[in-house]
Amino acid sequence: MRPHCVQLCLAPEIRSALIKFMAKNDLDKEYAALLLLVKSLYQEKLIEKEVYEVYTSRYSRKLCAEPQPPKLSPEQLAEKQRLDEKMRYFSMVLDQWQIHGVEWRQKKVVEAESWKDRVQTAAYVVDLAHRVEVNKP
Image 1 (cartoon, rainbow, N blue to C red):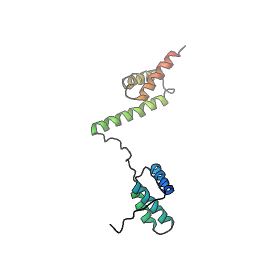
Image 2 (cartoon, helix red, strand yellow):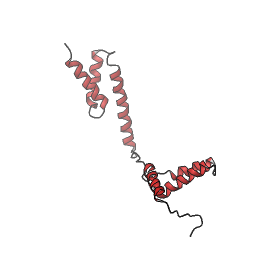
Image 3 (spheres, rainbow, N blue to C red):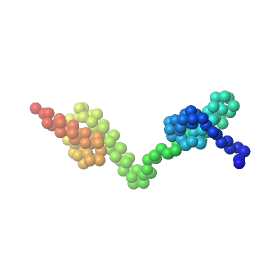
Image 4 (cartoon, helix red, strand yellow):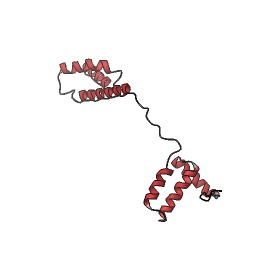
C-alpha cells in the first residue's frame, strides 16, 4: 500500500453529494473528491492560494474535453477569410443602401447575385433589391 494514498468509505449521503458534484462539474470520482478536498483545505487556510490554484486547475479538468474547432488548411483558412470579408462588405452595402442611387444599387445587386449562395448578407442584398423593385409604384 502506498502511504500517500487514502481510501475513503463514504456514507450514502456523502456519496450521493459527491455524485451530484461529479455530474454538475463533469468530473470523474477521483478528481471530484480531490477538488473538494483542495477547496476545503484552502477554506480552512491549511494551504496557500498558489497551491490551491494549481490543484484546482488540475482537478477541474472535464471528463470530456470541450470540442475543438477543426484545424483549417491554409486554403480553407484563406477561403474563410474571403467569405468573412464578403460578409462584412455586403453588410456595408445594406447599411448604405438608402444613401446611394439606383446605379450603385444595381452594381451591388449584380455582385451579390454571384455570392448569394455562399454569403448570407449577399442573399439579403438580393432580397432587398427584389422587395424594393416589387414595391415600386
